[in-house]
Picture (cartoon, rainbow, N blue to C red):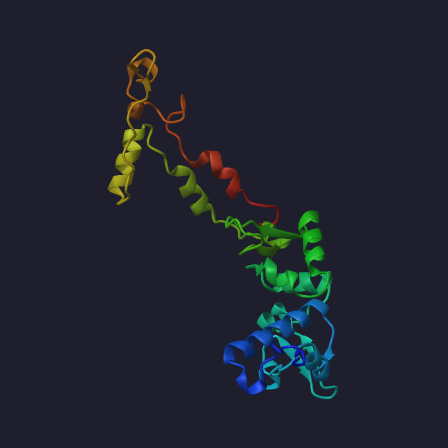
Length: 237
């Protein structure tokens, strides 16, 4: 009887393809990202056989300490903004420096526990999150410092007066014509609403076609005055 041999599925180092080598590197980086602790090259090579030293040591997501010969995960925010973010305080400081916002997934990657800290700050209003509509959790969601909600430059009096003086045409037909004159495309008006039970076409109040009725019900000569509160001067401006 022939001796039973246990097959080995470990490929020789020379037989590894570039794709296989890259896959090993990414697995090692994912491990460092999870533990958030330094590991020696020997420890990593024990856990990930055939780990390409030359590849992982040059990877942007890895910090190499030449003195201790250890490797540590480098968060995305440290790569993008050259800043060490280790707690709420440093995270808020980074956001204040970037009022245009930072991706939520990048902030959640900043340090162990960052996901919970960001969620808490969004809940208490310390930061603002712009919701995404992609259907995938946190995909493209952006976080802003709460200070952006109060940022605003004073608007000059001529601009405010001009805003309030622009009148909206009183009828839908006139409004559409103004848009056409300005080079805009107007959607084709939908067919009249028909009461299927009575077989009657709804003409609007007093038999007047809807396109000839005043906009906004009884409101005539509508202007931007209903929005002028947005341009009011704030104290000290």
